[in-house]
Amino acid sequence: MPSARVPTGVRSLDALLGGGLEPDGLTELYGEGGSGKTLLCLAVTVRIALAGRWVVYVDTEGVSVDRLEAMAGERLTEVLDHLLLATPKDLAAQGRAVATAGALARDAGRPVGLIVLDSATFYYRLALSSPEEDAGRLALVRELAELMATSRAVGVPVLFTNQVWRRPSDGSLEPLGGSFVNHAAKTILRLDRLEGARRRALLVKHRALAEASAEFRITPTGLT
Ligand code: ATP
Ligand code: MG
Image (cartoon, rainbow, N blue to C red; front, side):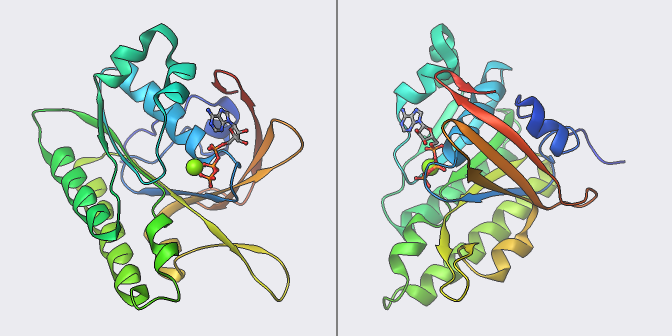
């Protein structure tokens, strides 16, 4: 029997996802800068932390406490008390952080409710077209495989974000990292900016549901 979905707390997205994040697999968010990937990661983080479970957050972009505070309000301390944050500064450190995330999630002493990797491809992108490119791709593949195994083993949802590149032939936005990344993700949501605070999430891949989309809105205190 499939275990219960983990709601994001954003009603339209949860409806799109058939209830929320799958607890035994990777969910990928990709989209251009400002599309809301980090905000969504933070929104789910706040929700899980306030429910008393731990969140292991691997952050390559510099999450600000201000942004968490905007969502958590006076319960910020409660959120921070349940946050295990790693801020790797290069590819190798990101690999170690992901390994640690897996070990923490498997440690029954501290109930982990979510693993976030935002962004999975920040350092990988920097390595593209450099001598580090192959090592970067290999590291990314290894990390996602490790996260998949952990998620399946302990039933903890993993949310990772991916940046995009523009295909020169038709101008389309494509996720980075090649086919393995999209293969590793059980569910893929593409986020697009609409006008102003409006954003659209397109369900690109899902085990059971057909391609569909939902809209949400960025507000000063999070997503609605
Ligand atoms: P990137 O690929 O650059 O990491 P992203 O998809 O993660 O982008 P978010 O950081 O989630 O995008 O930002 C979504 C929107 O949230 C932005 O358009 C921005 O206007 C808004 N926003 C609200 N509060 C903040 C804040 N404190 N810092 C940055 N952006 C904010
Ligand atoms: Mg971001």
